[in-house]
Length: 86
Image 1 (cartoon, rainbow, N blue to C red):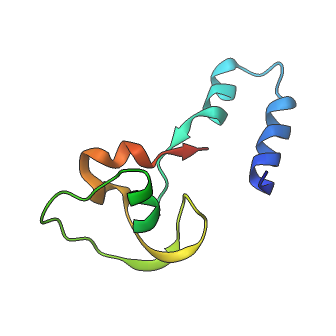
Image 2: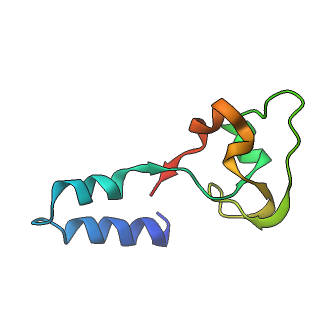
């Protein structure tokens, strides 16, 4: 389990009296800010045919590795496959 995951588990355990919607937000899946092509392709996301993307070196929100990344919006309607646990 990653450090981030451990922190979230501990935080959820300490929130027994907090509004349920806050707990649900912690479990929600969110869209990462940046995504590498490898992770996108592994999850079945594809750029629309003929679409050009702008890449830069950054940290992928899925694999957490430094790679060439782009925005999830570049994957059009398949971008919903890129969500990760918050």
